[in-house]
Amino acid sequence: MSDQTPDLASPDELHDADVSSLPINLTPRRRNVGRLVTAGGAALVLLVATVGFVAVNRYGSMTHQTDVFGPLAGTKRPIDGPGLDILLVGTDRRLGLTPPQQRALHVGAGKYGPPRPDSIMLVHLSESGDEVTVVSLPRESYVEIPAHPNIRGIPVAARKDRLNSAYLLGGRPLLVQTVEAATGVHIDHYLEVDFRGFLTMVEALDGVPVCVTKAIKDKPSGLSLAAGTTVVAGREALSYVRARAVDSEFGRLARQHRFLSSLVQKVTSTGTLINPLALNSVLDAASASITTDEGLTRDDLLALGARLRSIDLADILFFTVPIDKPNYRVDIGKAKNQSTMLWSDQSKAVFAKLAADEPLLRAPAADGSATAVRVAPSQVRIKVYNAAGVSGLAKRVADDLAASGYAIIGKPQNAKTSGATTTVIEYDPGFDQSLKTLQAALPGAQTKVVKGLGNTFVLLVGSDYTGVRPVSVSANALGPTTSIKSPTRLRTAADSICK
Image (cartoon, rainbow, N blue to C red; front, side, top):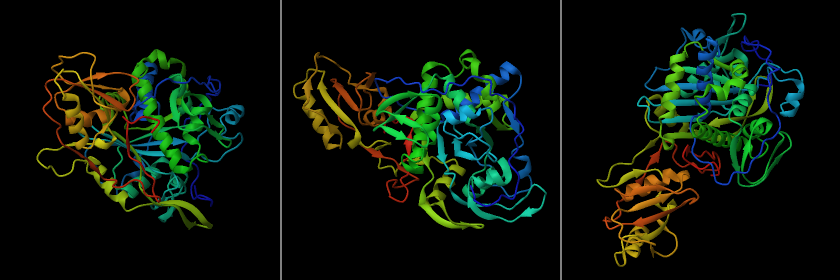
């Protein structure tokens, strides 16, 4: 947010209902999880959509709706292209949280100015319904805020500022307009959730698993986690997605992506998502904490939830917009030497693809035989067993796979049984994206889920083995993502939350 006095009053705050009496468990809730929780999706969108739909059915009214797009009539907007684009915003709005609750959550306790976006994500659902892309837009992004009228109707010239300042200067409409101008992507719908809405939804799921490779102790946010996988709820869940002193703004955004992935895995695995009874105790608080545009109808919410539930987890992508300068110093109004983030030129290619509804992960030029995959063979670890009883088969297959770049673990061996006519791939469900690479190399092989295998596949070779098919790794619109300037990492929802 800009350090200078804003031109406008606070954004519209029309739903100031007192929900402070509703219960929220702010105490840490921990349970060590024996195996890594994997997969994910556009979880918060899905959960918010579902809460809204259940609220419609139960109360006959939507979650709070506001006119987001009406004020944009007559302004220059990007062409409405194929697919569905949603601006998902998490704000630091503290409505309904008592001062003791605010202190327990480490969000302070006192009088605050207008709410500000704490998290901004652009969610794109492809027209074909087979891919979801979630792009985090850092709140400190240095962008141009379009010209707009202030609260008195006096024109205000366009200005460069941090992205989240648009919300303060002109509310939700100006934030949408600013994101559209910066990305060239036409936004179809708007979804907003505040602190309390986030907490109540996590509580409805009885916590969400998160994973850290080393212990975290962050005093400013109150976050304290042991290494490994832990179920978090209440203040720990909020601290996990908000803490930035732990590992920078990039780390905070990466944690948000992992949290969303884990959240939707929890939702889909427990059946909570469409169970009104499971959400009954938190519907009032959630509906008071969620804001949508007026055009997001009950039918839209139902269709949105159905589309997201049917998408393959490997086709749900998370990443942060590519950044060229993470500490870009500029003067903003009277405030001197302010730290912002400057997007790289690479971001233009990313948003051009979203606007055109083109996949960010694209197959390279066909070579006539290679199948495009997303995980390189070198990252696929395989133990090879001869299940057919054919002399020397295990070693031959292991040599073929090694020659194609796969990582062979241990010496090829004979299986406990023989006579198998069909090749079987045993895999851990947390590595279904790597599985696709191995399936492409061994078409016709059957698969079998074996929990606990981790990142190593067990290949039981049958007499149907005819060789290893070539594969080629897909390129992507982000290009290299390991530069020091912009440590952006594209991850799919099928990735382990510990990666």
